[in-house]
Length: 495
Image (cartoon, rainbow, N blue to C red; front, side):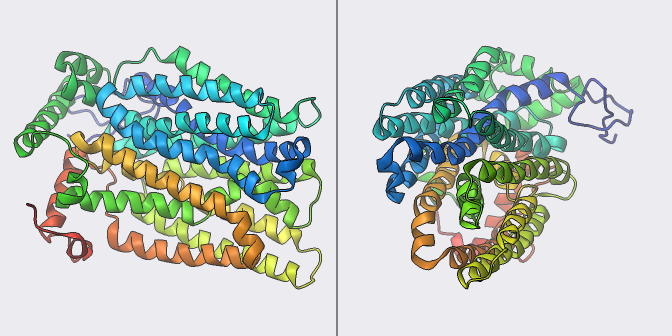
């Protein structure tokens, strides 16, 4: 029997019938993906909205306008909250489940949005940013995990990448909102306060069941089977349950409890974590949120002084980001995670060199090169969005054993947010110290290192079941990884 689902089918797999699994085959899976993906919308909207709101916050608060450090703190305080939220989110997902974690994130995010909208001074605004960050951090762990655990392996990459599409769609939406409120009294308050809407929407739509894999392990096998039966036909369901049961039984025999230190002590988990966390770190250190947080500021650096024009040009960047993610959703299950990351990083390197050249020329007295910088931004996004946007989140949703998926996903997302914080908190200061051109050149060098990392540490997981991915890591720890030398750098004997 081949597995091949056709559009418009039930999403089930019938014996002896060739069908093709598509993203629209099963309405239950698609609905769960969209509703859970609203967590990505929260993530994206908050990322994008602050870049435009900051222009008007500076106009309202003189202290902010006169201090680059205060501007960076307003941006990065949400990242500090996200670090805490992601770190706690892994534990929260394991203990309470994916659905409960989503609801908690929605409440915290909505509260933070309202605090920001009513902030009388920069310091209350910073507190609101911290709350919003907590919600985003929890959502960043939960949404891809929730989607991955309810997705057939054949289309898991694309469905998890839908969460990234929601992130980029949220960023694009934030720029539209920013433009829409430029002439409205209390401009930035509306920009930040309206962020509560998607959180309230997701909370009201969360009539979905808990993740079937979490249910099977933690609460009720009958509930898990009822949910899985909405995803698979009886024959495929039987196979999935046998694999899931065998994997969980093996984990129970191997260890009595889940411990953070085991992530570094157990060889296959360590290998997986290094690959996943490394991808998350390089996603940030190759500059994506430098572009998304500060693209209006970068445009102004390039010579376009008007706040409104800066936002309009940044809208092009956000649109390219969303469009590129759609391409990535198609490619990730066809080309594969590894090849997509490598091709994406190649384009990122070239575009960062172009951006660096544009700003070096501008600092040398050349005029009319602002459009070269804008072109560099657009090329950067069109290269980054299909690959290094979705690949780290997809890989991290599928490479960890069942019992460690929550804590490893949380730890890896924490690495992402810590890296994000470092970039956001330092970009303007580094640009002031060494120049914008040199700053982008540094990012290009980091992107070269990212290529080397992917080649050495990241395996291909396209189309593999969770159990097959676990087997892949076990083979690598035994030195059967076809010449890949990563494990020799990481192994240590278990005690």
